[in-house]
Image 1 (cartoon, each protein chain N blue to C red):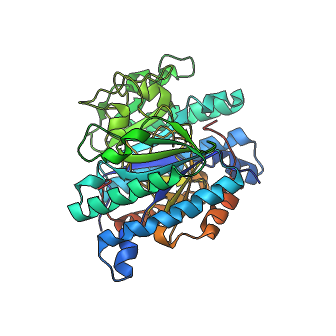
Image 2 (cartoon, one colour; image 1 turned 45 degrees about the vertical axis):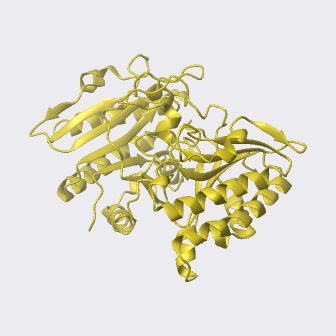
Length: 207
Length: 207
């Protein structure tokens, strides 16, 4: 089976899941950490070379502070948990903002943890405008995400069919697979289905 | 019904359609012009404010020359046909290349035709690298597509679930709808279904 080298993950639906469970919206995020680790182990077994996780964005930080604190805490915990594994880890986002959690500053340059291995890019307080250096119609001079390679497959949980500003340059040729289930209801079967679908797509890179 | 202000169109599947009809691959493109005009009239009736059509890309020009000539001819004919309508028309792409058809040079600045009206952006010899001014990891200083507004809904014909380099900045928040039928088999119902689906999506703009 033809596997993607680099998978982008948009783990959406935490709040809708929490509401369905009778919890407050902010309570969903902590239930998103364990699915992320299951996904990491699954992709590691498969030999996937690189993964990019959409943690939270500058846009997201405009939400009520209780939610903001909850998703920030979940991202910090996720990164610190990944740093206990064998991985080559980079946290990518706007660090010049009070919204960037100080605990993650040590991860904003790529480091090998354990034996190294899969490249993981974890987006924290990311925005595509920041990535492009966009200001009053001008862009550049450097793409801040230039460390991140082209993404072959984007999997989005939570049913929405959009990129929501996720790494626009790396996603220009990505195949896009949507899982209707919410992220906390992650199942390995979602990924198995996404990979089977991906393997049937042709690779044209726009050609 | 909540309608998109700006719709992006990826009219894919011309070659696969032609092969299914027992024709040569290159013969599909001329059958893509009339669907485009039907779509234009439909969107005009609905009061859509802006449309962006993916004509052809720099990547596409690497295809066999018979195909290249056929899709170039179809794009020239499409633009010249649109210029007979009421529209505010812009052709956007890399003009500094032999692949850019000279007949379309007069359209590379926006002009009103007839009574003006819907803004139409027609991508000809476009590439996202060109758009970004991308060169050896540097970008900028200006987005060449800065004239084109944010796209609310992208409709892609031909079953593929990818953007293929289509206006990455304008598509960052777009909802993405895929029609499995090939573009020459365009039906108004495809658009009706896409718009009904779009109207049920929430607008978050990443928030």
